[in-house]
Image (cartoon, rainbow, N blue to C red; front, side):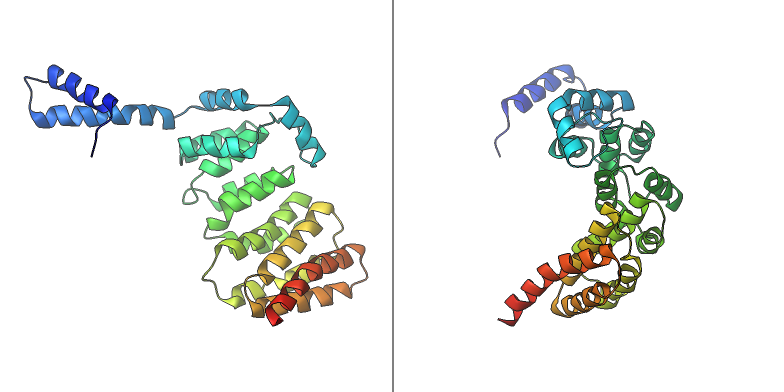
Length: 266
């Protein structure tokens, strides 16, 4: 395999510096020299991370966030792909994620959800983060990046779905949708247990709650044919409720699921 010019130059330097030492020592130092830039890059402080975020901020993007109903309080205005690129560079760093969350900065919290470690995230910390939700995108990112992976996620989805706070309640149903996307090997019974919760909470006319209920209902219904039939049955039951939100949820779900059923039957 061909070596890059940079790597060949590094080897020449180390041969000169360590000409009187063992080959193993020189080799170890060479490996360390190549690793150091990565270690420095991935071990960022809060201030260094915030500096990187400020460099990526855009007033124009910030204005666009407002139009999509995203809170601009403490926000910088950074596109999601840019946050993901930075997260890829940092990799997993739970301590940094915890510190970033405490800054209250919108994008810092989004980034925190991308670099946090699900093995280190406790129920207490999860509850604290969820209680801080003030917009739908923070809710969806935390649920979709880390929370669904935790061993207590199923319990929390049911707990949050019964909450009073709009974005906490949304989190419960977003988790259900995320389970449908990511938990490929779960038995149907796991997902069937969510339908009564959707039916129970379908009265809630708050925009980000009813949209999350519809999303979870549709997402579970798209997993397989039996779940689709169960989701359609649930939607019809929801439609009988004397609530504007319930009728919207049912109509939204049936429009998508019924068309997919027709495709399957044909």
